[in-house]
Image (cartoon, helix red, strand yellow):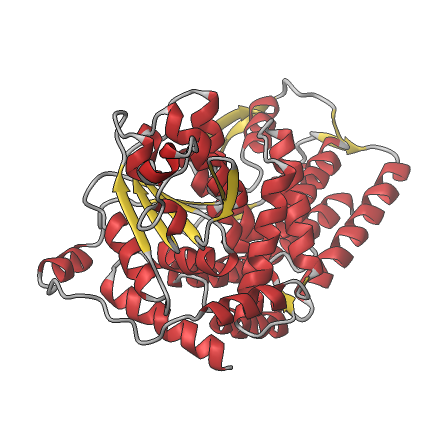
Length: 468
């Protein structure tokens, strides 16, 4: 599509200019398209203001307002001086031309240093894109306001309200990769000339198209899952923020010609749901995992399989738990030595996947290795160590039913794995809004699911062997 290609070229040119800023670039353009605001938090000298200026260059018709705020900044410096002609007529009006109320894009540096006299008017501009000028309320033509700060806001109702109005939040740190750092040292300080420019009509058209975009069941499930997770951790996310995050996903899909937003758009929410930078990685991991669940949470299945194995193991009723072994039993994974059944079982409950060496084996031929269950059977049947006895068959039948149910759910995830992988790879390649890091990690998580499913099958087989 022409619009998708236009946006892709714009994003590519900015990524060539700024290293390790893929997320911030995509978010800045999405903020522009959706009419939302963006906050950059991080140490000075990380190209925050420069990025905002270059994003403004991507607008065909534009007026940029830039100001560094301090606690001593007056409203006149941000919203315009008082009109002397209006004062003569006993009217309180400001001359707003060239100031924030007339800007298409605004960049406010050190935004949390603004004083109360500025904050009240600023909140109205952020919320409603309106400015109270004397007795009149005028529309502010701003698409997005980009805020920057070296630190998070201090406690205070006004500053927290201001912080909440920025839907997109990014923590911009110093360049971490050595090659990227050297690239900056060797780069030329040239003016940015965008390969494409967005018009007001194009932005309006994308906004109109986004209203008809639907969210797939995967996206809705991810949102519900994250909402439940946050509530369980007593983390508050307002309904307004959830609604706006969903609207961003629709805008991102509409901009590249999609009528439905699939699971690959879910990672965009990672930049809208955190309050403290320490939360970022946890939220990102949860969102990425929800992208590749395929309706089946294999991590949860793995936990269920482990629990079932332990329950089946507990059905082995110890006859003589304090029995001293006639020979020492060694763990082949950690070299632990056990002289009693009680100590051996305790170790197994803590390390259920460890295996053990045959105490009657010959070191010259190499010791045989056994799972705990196989070792119990060998010691009991082959060497005559009376150790355990099984409980009644009703429990065995119940465990067998649980095994069959888990295997059926695991097979549901396993069937079509390669088909789903190909589909995910195609969707990721087609989604221009994701960083290369997000694409790589999503595919890695998806491939790890196959390993987990194989582990589940091995656990189920061990449980079946235990019950036989």
